[in-house]
Structures are given as structure tokens and as C-alpha cells.
Length: 160
Image (tube, rainbow, N blue to C red; front, side):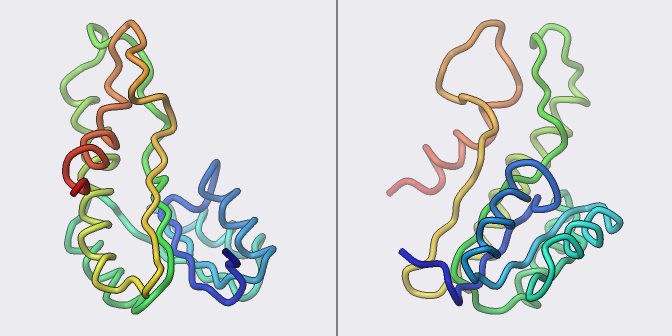
């Protein structure tokens, strides 16, 4: 499958896996749209990618902002969701409820709402890809907060 001429939306596309995806997609001729909550990072990443990359600020903890983002983007071919702060990888017993909620807000609800609002705008043959950033099904001890977020979507909400 060629990505040349395809419009790729990458939420969390200013660093890490998301930025690497953006770089590769741009290299093969895709139109890249990156989004992140930090405008300075959006500007720096967009500049580094060069034309025809587009960057937008998006707070994935805000469902209305996600809906508006996809309304403005219009039709596109592929969504890649890698958003979220550095993963909370520590024993569950050392994790506060506030820390767990913050991770889940962005990595579960942000991903779920992105899929919800993206789906009607996906062109035929399009895709939605979530990165877990961890081995969600590995059953590593001690129990971690990360890993349940994307698994809950891919194994429940999106399965048919």
C-alpha cells in the first residue's frame, strides 16, 4: 500500500513514535497533519517536517476540541493515535488515583473520542491505528496503569 498522496493525521505527532510516523509518511509523499497539546512543539515539529506538513494544537482531554478538530480536518485516509504523556510505568500500589485518571483521560478517552469523530471522515480503505507504547497483554508484574487503556478500545469497543 502506497501512502503517496494520502492524508495522514497523527495525534501525538510531535515526538517519539508519532513524530517518527510523521517523518516516514512525509518521506514517501503523504500529506501529514500532526496534532499535540503543546503549540511550541507543534510549531517545531511542523517546521522540521517541512511542506506539506500541517500542525495543529489539540487537547485530547477535551471531547469538544476533538470533534472540532476532525470537523476542520475534513476527509482523510489514516489516523495514528500516539498521544499521552510519558507512560506511567510504576507499581499500581504507588500510583495515585489522580495519576491513573490523567493517563486514562488522554490515552483511553482521547483515543476513543478520536476514533468516534474520525470514523465518519475516513476515506474508503482508511485506517485507525493506536499505539500502546507498552505490551498491554503481557501481564507484566507489577500491575501498571498503562496497557489497559488501548486494550479496552481495541478488544472491546472496536471489535465486531
